[in-house]
Length: 227
Image (tube, rainbow, N blue to C red; front, top):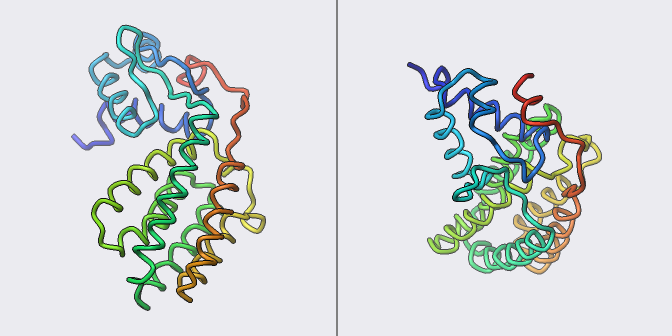
């Protein structure tokens, strides 16, 4: 049986698509009984799907209570961006000296693909590309610890992008973050560390500001599964 045909994948995909579409509010309990009755699947694949979402940081399993969509606080997100900025600064220190001319073409390809994700309103692909872009300097640094910690930070950042980012409301020609990525590539190409550090600082502030932490007007779990 193909992976996409399994009951686990069906539950995983429907719940994740609903989260990407901002249909389920952070903090919502993902009740197994409700999912079973709505999707006509047993509890075993549901638990497997919820575990997969938990591994991606989108779901939190609270003992004796159940599975909930993660609901980070504003203070938690602020602390995250403060630490992420410091790690991004370290990637400049250790990665920028190792950038080769051949690497620049790879960065420009990221920009082209990123622009296309905005045209297609493809948040999932955008999140993957954004992670690759911001992981680039850590990877070329060759420092396995920096790579590991940046990877973990960007994985967490993906959760915030999925839940709160303004991605769906930004037109390609109005995208400030995309222009900032382009300016960062120019600074990398010139090996201009001072400008790059300034751009990262601004970029982190804009990335936080682009998170819509207010209520979106979400649907109930039953309504989402009935779609």
